[in-house]
Length: 545
Image 1 (cartoon, helix red, strand yellow):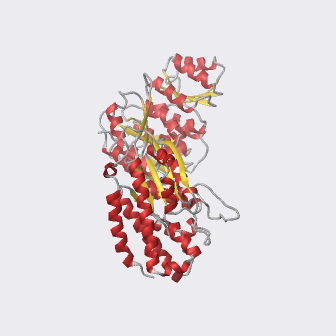
Image 2 (tube, rainbow, N blue to C red; image 1 turned 90 degrees about the horizontal axis):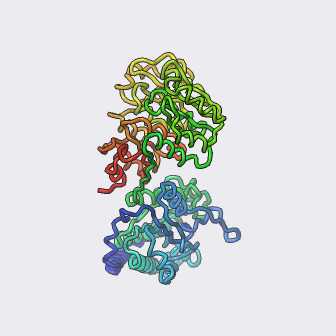
Image 3 (spheres, rainbow, N blue to C red; image 1 turned 60 degrees about the horizontal axis):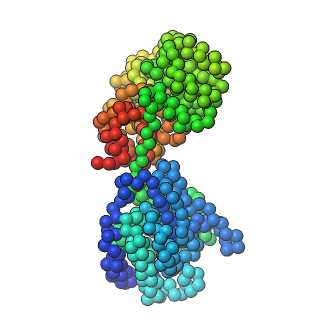
């Protein structure tokens, strides 16, 4: 069958639709920059409803649809305000959607939405294919069906744009659900599907909406995405793949949220982080010196493994607020990082007097302390190697190392200390963090199965780690000039599946903005007060000019 002649008529019809849509709709270029959440409504047929590939008329099966996965993604980046499916009807056609949208109660629901997805159109010809397939052999009849789809879909969009001219609307294109059919039977259906997709694409263009193609994505692996040849509905993997195609389009129009965790100083910020991540209690607490970094650099994997917050102390005195937080957490043990100079016996005794056990990790130097912490962790095949005389690289990788139970083993630029070298023998692979200024090429070549992750500076190194090792739509951010907030925040970042980025307090780095764009980050948790990360940096992360 050939339906090329009908396309000229469809193009004319789409021009009419473009004139019918209210002109203010074309001003809907993005979400209000002040909004921090997205109110999402999904409209459509069985694909919006979530009908599964094993569903039958006798035994219907409905699961998570692409819309549910989109809502889940929004929730994961803390952007979801509300989600509903006010019209999700298996077998629905364009006239069914138009009828539903004509009702005042439906229009009222859509007035307050920020984002709408629509899957509609395929059933208009699939129902004919099922009940009167000969009709689809007549180009004139096919033209009537396609024109009706365009009219109904266009009228539906006219209503949506009238009640909500600024919503971001995403119109789904269809895939070939009959890939197992013989080629001669597939071709007519493919042509019909392409015609419907052309209509949807044209309506999206005419109504300042977004067309979301799915045809090529499903065709990449049809047996995985459409496991039942007798049923056009996707598997869960198929619905996820469709959701990913929507997300590619949506990512350019979503707001960016920021949350700040901060106290009056680094000790108070650590307490706030503890309270955010361990709301009731903790099995253990990590206690590190708050005014110097060497003994604390390797603490994040230990904290994650024991599900413990990291708190800070003065060397010779336990801050009353820190003591109160330890009491609130009621841990069985407090792990102390460093020897008596780092954390004095008097501080340790205060903890013991609270009827809490202590376990101290101390060595002759930072390298031995690091090695003792690493040896305490569960076995793995990979170790992280970072310079022990500078803190940024070790902290940039801390949340990733923690989440994967990789020890952070400290080294010098040109020399591997004995304690570090001994521990490294247990690992066939290693990740060298930083460039040649912190780990020389000669030393790198001595590391077991080493891969280097390093940039031009600490900010680029952290961005590379986030992008290549620890990608997420969410990221923790701390100053790259001080160690404390990054140290105490690293374990919460790992606990909540966040990437981790370092920033200059006052000057935004291109590497950070590039990572934000490449990862599609929509929520930043900023660690520390305005002196650590300024309001100017926060606004730049949000995309506010």
